Image 1 (cartoon, helix red, strand yellow):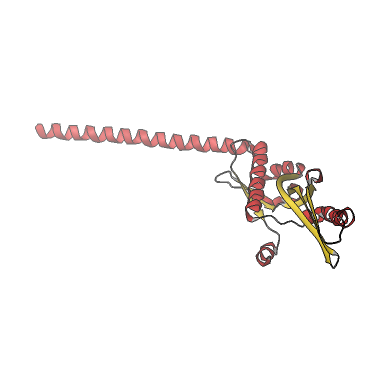
Image 2 (image 1 turned 180 degrees about the vertical axis):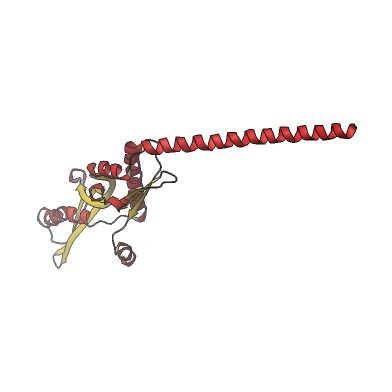
Length: 219
């Protein structure tokens, strides 16, 4: 009699365990199904890469500004004496990523994570603005040279060379990194304005062929 009671109790425990396990499994299946349904609905609301491409192209350019200083020194040495002129002025260098050049394969979207991945040309300089109204000028004249003639002449040469010097400026590694990071951030923000504020975005900047070799060979 006692043995039958133990068996009945054990069977009840097994039945309860199976019932709980079945309930948990059913709940897990429902949770997975609901999550998949939510993901499918979210995926259906997310714009396709082609839609993002068209919207990004319409924005044309993403620009980044870097403020720097340009300096030009001119002069001449002769038996009559030396003359040197130096002009320094603030300059603003404008870099841009041209979104109008995006090709269909440059924007993809992961079917698993929904992340947008963009491959873009690296930022290029499109303008250099020299603020000559804030220049700092200095002229040094020695010997028989007259500042009113020789000094002002070389000072004028230096001023005229400011714009060419600004156009020829190269960024320091830290400023170049700032331009790239700001460009990535601005492009990612633009995509989120199109796809939604919670969209996951990765921006990869592609340098033109030969750019790395040229950078390595530069003094």
